[in-house]
Image 1 (tube, rainbow, N blue to C red):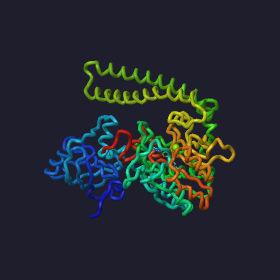
Image 2: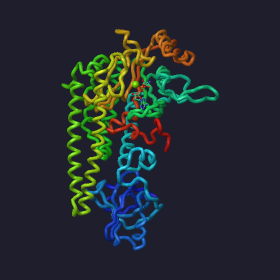
Image 3: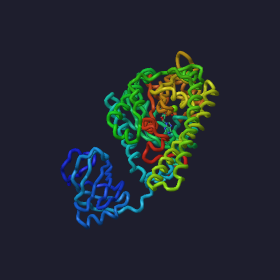
Image 4: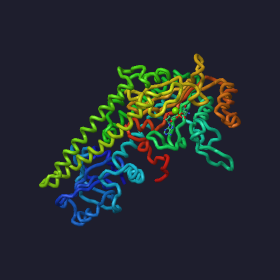
Length: 507
Ligand code: 4AD
Ligand code: MG
């Protein structure tokens, strides 16, 4: 049997076809049911009229609760006002399975509640849109690397050595030996690049991040290209054209989804502009407010933002108070009370966000003022810096002590390592970490000792320096961090179907 899908309705205009899916909404009017059908490819309104279906079918529609699975046969009629631009005029409706009372109703739910119901929440239009964008990003990533001649290879997930420090390792057991869940496929990526030239891995990675932040997952997907005969500058060129290509692809192919989630795409469109490249020293001067950028000073901008947020809070509070007074006055119609109450609820939500900003900005200000030269950036520092930009920023040449053991020491200044972080604008922060790799075997051995890593687990890695060492570089992009920024999500947990993070193992 041919399957008809909501995304293809334009092809069937004027025809009578059968659609299968779930009722994501039902409204009743005299002699009419308005059912919004969802089939995984889209949403469309179906009108069931007592005049167009049998009495039995019409009676049956009464039991269609939210998320009841149904099959609707009807004529496809163009209607610009409706979601998707078409309406189905039903001639038959079959109920497949009546749904119990659906826990996710229309009213606002807290995020923790929705996370507990993640297996159902995924059906909502917003979550659906985010997952479609995630899918497009994944597709665009493969398209980019495949067309650039990279070979996709896979790194193991059980590993015997740490790649990114020992503090956030998930330890497990492997036939009696201690093993770790992979934090990064990079070390294997280097070995594979020496066999294939240019490779990329794309797999899950694990980090025990024992704190709740809006950027950290315990299990996330990373894309890690590794290229032989590349230095840090070629690496940065590649990162830039890669990110530009992925964001452009999403803009071209996900306009509907971006609109559904209310993403203002103007910042994303800036992706065609050159990404600023700042040395660590320059970035620190900007964070501390010692150097202006784009006509802005970090400290002054934060102070102005805080003042603006405080003023906005006062304004919203005043509007809420005014409406609350209004609905107290006797004699107001029920509909009008409902309308005002909905406005009040919306304003209260806005207020919550503003209050969070008002709590955050002083913290950012403090960390910007007190940043100690020579240390790594924390989340606040990245936020302070990237709020000043509307394109991704690359920060390179980091103090070698704060970065991973495998990064190449800068030949021009041995205090620095040739690492690069890419920070997404709008306060999002790090989405890519990478760099040129150390080729000097003795420096590497020194670093492995300094980091107190077990040398025997790295012997195979040192072989890459023993047998035909060459300059090489690579990077790692955190998929969920990119999805979060592209969709402008408040938290990384909405960027992956089933997030695993501190305090969250179910569903
Ligand atoms: O900067 P990181 O730690 O770099 C590496 O793992 C390198 N070995 C990559 C390479 O050069 N091949 O991690 C890379 C990226 C980060 O920029 C961030 O986007 C993401 O991985 N990431 C996380 N995403 C979500 N949750 C976490 N806990 C993450 N930790 C890192
Ligand atoms: Mg990093």
